[in-house]
Length: 305
Image 1 (cartoon, rainbow, N blue to C red):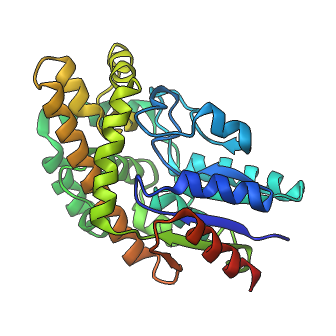
Image 2: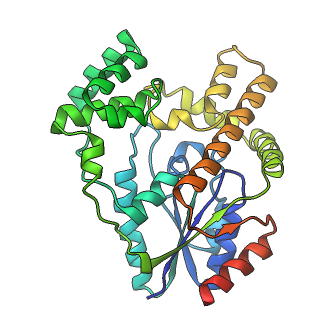
């Protein structure tokens, strides 16, 4: 069976163009592994493949979730595994591409069976969050589940809430549940590559792309999404650039200031992606070249070995 091809890289590093070219050359189909590109509300702001690109190869898990939903890595893993199996069944090559490291970790190392959030408990914890603040809930988590708390920032409210939910629901920590996992894909079933382009060049690309997004209607996307008046803790609210552009729409920032903040936040996210690749993917071959043809050549030569 043809191995599943995994491509991880920082934002604006050219992953989508690389995956599309490989799909056309290898007879492949593309599976999204970006936690923001799953949301249908932000095609432009999250740089999802264009309609024209989607006609050149089959794409999956792009824009299939409403921004009001709390999409999880567990749901992504279930959906991705089914799609990968169906692609293999047709004799095609699955190409999983994105910048969300946790998705790739779940796909190659496994994910514990963690229960879905309890709506009543979630509401109770959100009320406490508003009253007490995230650091106070993190302090409680540190007392009850120090291993998990150590891996979370005090102001990382969504993950702190989730860790407390699991404790209340199961009586066990997320760390303990995650210790009992098996990899969904065996080591012989996939091959992964990590894009590590020159950082200064990448940061310039981030700035240019954000300007292009504004020209292509990103602000209108954010305006329509803000009008829904959804829970500010929803994952979609963290789409890079969305908070700054929402502040602009509220009259708190000029468009130029919002763009600068959006670019800055995206650069910081890229830095975290580089850190993830270095720490979590030490054995993945690096693709340092920015040239598309050089990247394709390196991958195809590796696959031929």
